[in-house]
Length: 562
Image (cartoon, rainbow, N blue to C red; front, side, top):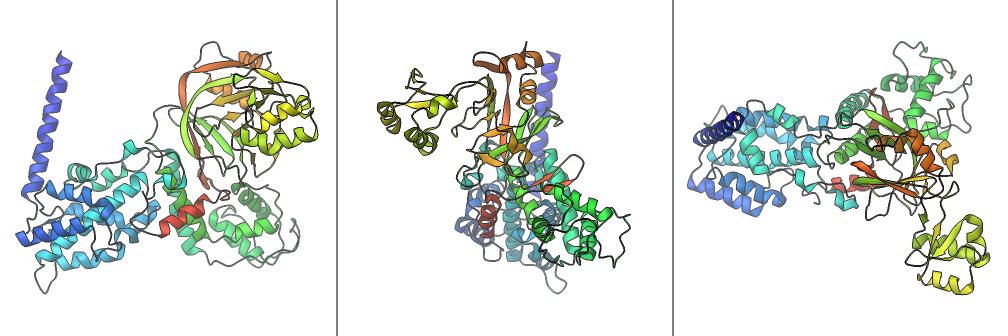
């Protein structure tokens, strides 16, 4: 009972403290005249203010009206006709928005010095109108900045990404009132707004490095090559190659490459290998057309890639306090993390083909594992790929280990397909599945996180694709390089499932479904920039064009589609 009384007293003190803070804020707020309040109400109702970089703020009107109604339509950011310390702190943070992957211009970056000057001019006293305009401008920009930093600017649903979490949205009026307008440490409060994922924080740090690199780089283009340049051969681009790779860190600062050197050799070869590896290419050390094209991508473009990747980080639910699995499509890589974001398992993956079979971007929860699964062939694959084979060879299914089943999964045919059965397949009355075994397209195990896309992770007999640097070859599901390792990881808390039993189940005689002791969140994500734990920055191709689509949406400015 003592603990309960302590909790109750704590709650009462918290409520009292909040009431005092709110009272202080109201008492010292700048109260405009009736005319000033009428202007403020009208501007909020119109949802438009011409002096803003993006005048239309109608998507925030309800939040802004609630914010000012809590204060009797007095000014929150002006006291004694002077900006509050909190106002200046918010402005300073917004001016630094580029360092977070946003744009200071979106939050009226170039306009704040003049607005601040108007409130304390030397020649004349500031007017109530100037104070009201300043206050509204700061409220609009602050709400935009906080929302953008927390959940991103564009709703991921605009791109059919099913990863947004509506529950993480702030009540912006309450957030500003309770946590910002009277805070002695606005920067500390707003640092908590950002995603808490370690990968996000590493990407922000990498962005800040590349902003500086882009400012220092002269932008010279490397000369094209008709044939690849091998180590020991002459290449007129060696001086530029040396400067660029030294700048971005692939060539150590201590490397001794003479400024007028034109032979491609020595430490420069290892630097090119590092660069190729960071871009997901084969680290051959040869300078071919692809390597030249990659090196000639402006560093400002790499900055843009990071900005787009950070936008997608902000779409994710708040940081998880449990284990999770993440597959990054452009990287062709999967990682399983524990609750402290330490990697438990990582491996290469094969994802959906860029042309027509994109793997969707979404999040769901893994619930069970199936050993020696059947492959239920989707109708689209049956129509487009299997029926033409059957029409040419009625024994095709039997040769490949398929069978025809009805809606109750009763086998209709596992041998020669008759013309009558073929007709029913064409009409969609029957379906095809592949028998379990090593030749099954799903291999010996699949991992199921039920979703509307019918996408899952699975083993594969087509292991040759893992040797390729670009691995988009599937119909949309995710093929795993080392499925037994993932099985051991996801079943580590499920009693009785050790490596030996997993091996036995994969090589048994019948399908076996195992429910996970603890369901595991799964994220299928799309990021063309990955910053690993060692700080090395990797860039990947925009294989599905999602970066391009996001960039177009952002180019339209506020109000962004939500």
